Amino acid sequence: MIVAGIGFRRIAAAEDIVALVEQALERAALTRDSLAKLATIKALADMPAFAESARRLAVLAIAVEESALAAAAQRVRTQSARSIAAHGVGSVAEAAALAAAGPRSELVLTRIASASATCALARLETAP
Image 1 (cartoon, helix red, strand yellow):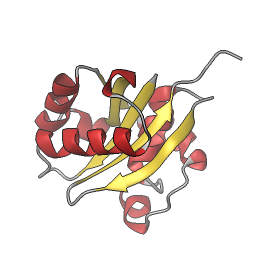
Image 2 (tube, one colour):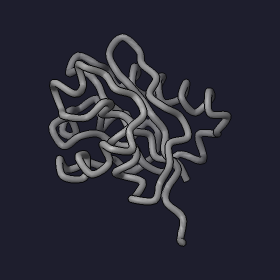
Image 3 (cartoon, rainbow, N blue to C red):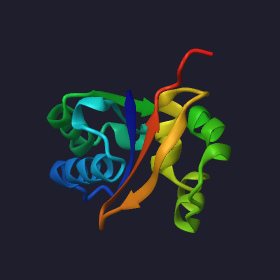
């Protein structure tokens, strides 16, 4: 199963986030049925657009704690100066996806961006 990690500006609407997640799934040659969770940082998780996006995608909404984000930061591939300055990680979307998917998860799609959001996909960890 897949976790979509999301970073977004407070002006982002649910339809913007949903469209970006669908674009990410298409780029990774995955179906919407493979999506299990939508994850973002705790600071954005209470935003109505995030909750509404999870509802529209019919997936669980996950708020990633700062400590989990930091732990996933070393596995992030994208290094955005803006993201590093604001959140201490190269990509909020990639770190949120990896953190919500588990310590042995892997990115299946690095960050893609729209005007108001970013999205990355991670595969849920599998048993060793």
